[in-house]
Image 1 (cartoon, helix red, strand yellow):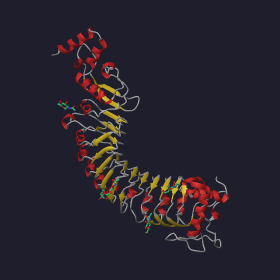
Image 2 (image 1 turned 120 degrees about the vertical axis):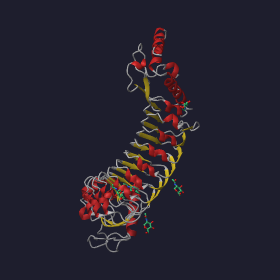
Image 3 (image 1 turned 135 degrees about the vertical axis):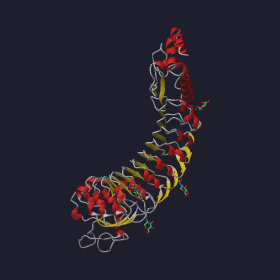
Image 4 (image 1 turned 60 degrees about the vertical axis):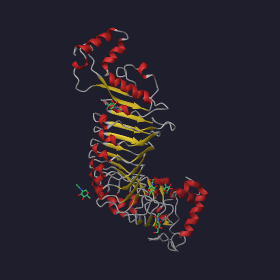
Length: 479
Ligand SMILES: *[C@@H]1O[C@H](CO)[C@@H](O)[C@H](O)[C@H]1NC(C)=O
Ligand SMILES: *[C@@H]1O[C@H](CO)[C@@H](O)[C@H](O)[C@H]1NC(C)=O
Ligand SMILES: *[C@@H]1O[C@H](CO)[C@@H](O)[C@H](O)[C@H]1NC(C)=O
Ligand SMILES: *[C@@H]1O[C@H](CO)[C@@H](O)[C@H](O)[C@H]1NC(C)=O
Ligand SMILES: *[C@@H]1O[C@H](CO)[C@@H](O)[C@H](O)[C@H]1NC(C)=O
């Protein structure tokens, strides 16, 4: 038994071609055969068997081999000296990696490569007339897999469901099945078994059904992205168990009911995106405890109700987007404490009352959109603020707003009309308190304001959506 491999190795060494013979000894022949079958199913970049008879001996870009972990000298045969090499990483799709042929088929046998750790199919299955199915072999064939990273991304011709057998790949740390528009069905509940997962990205597919509550068992998750699918039902409250979570993106699904209160437990979160769903109700009490939150992106949900002052406690917040969500009542004064804020989007709501003066002291702000609300009163921004934001300030569609031109230095101009126009020069302190209509006599009337605005808009063209474009009008020249 011991002599056999040495004898074969010696024989092969003596026979030409020597290189191929040595290669045969360096790689397990069953593994090499599997690799060739995978390559032939996916790529016709070359005749793999003929041109690369020794894959691990001279790997192509996208192929990585390593000696088996823990293999000593004895295993490979005394006369050869080289440790057995195993395929540990395969990359397909994007140069310099092997490109995928027109009729590329998803190769289930790839999961039988016993030492594979990373597998990538990126921009690979793209031919609409040769769709192929995302299929895994039987769980028995997968249980020995040590796969840590599986990335199947941007494959518009890949169909099928997220295979339940994935749950067998217990070593997975990074799982990306993203931008495969034909991949549909539900997220398998077995996903709870993948407890080593650090990142799970199933975005931009056609997944439906619920977000499985068992996802709460994936305690190591740092990133969870299920955005741009058709997931429905409620956000499971068990999501609050994911204490390591830094990024949570559930945008652009069909999720309904409220944000679970347990979200306030996700104190590692830096990025939370829930836009374009059917979420209603209130923000979780204690949301200001999300001390690390930098992005709260929650446009276009039928939330309604008032904006909670508590959001003003999110000291690290850089972007706060709450547009198109039916919020009513005032902009909380507390938003003026968000000193890291660079972007505030509150457009297309029903917000009333004045713009809090404290917003003008947010020194990092460069994008502020308050358009299409029912805000009123004097715009509290000074010339420096107005100049800094320029076209990134949008106050249009708030017919009750007016500008106290005493606060605006020469050369900046005014936007929504002077608070003094048509009156005696006094700034109306709360010209439009509730519904957006402005008291006659002081400030702009709704009718006059909108007529003038649209006239001015017509003169300057589409640039003038934002109030700041209108500044130029007083100077009778675009800036
Ligand atoms: C699964 O394992 C069986 C038994 O080892 C083997 O015959 C079969 O080819 C494997 N299937 C795949 C797709 O690797
Ligand atoms: C969301 O759900 C509604 C009602 O169930 C359905 O009509 C609609 O098509 C769904 N939208 C998406 C994007 O799946
Ligand atoms: C998590 O959130 C829930 C609901 O808000 C709360 O009852 C629970 O005490 C929180 N758990 C921890 C450990 O903070
Ligand atoms: C504002 O409120 C009115 C009446 O309450 C409602 O009809 C309208 O749809 C709301 N607008 C938005 C953008 O939510
Ligand atoms: C503000 O929001 C409106 C409505 O969504 C949009 O049309 C406009 O371009 C935005 N303005 C700026 C300056 O981003």
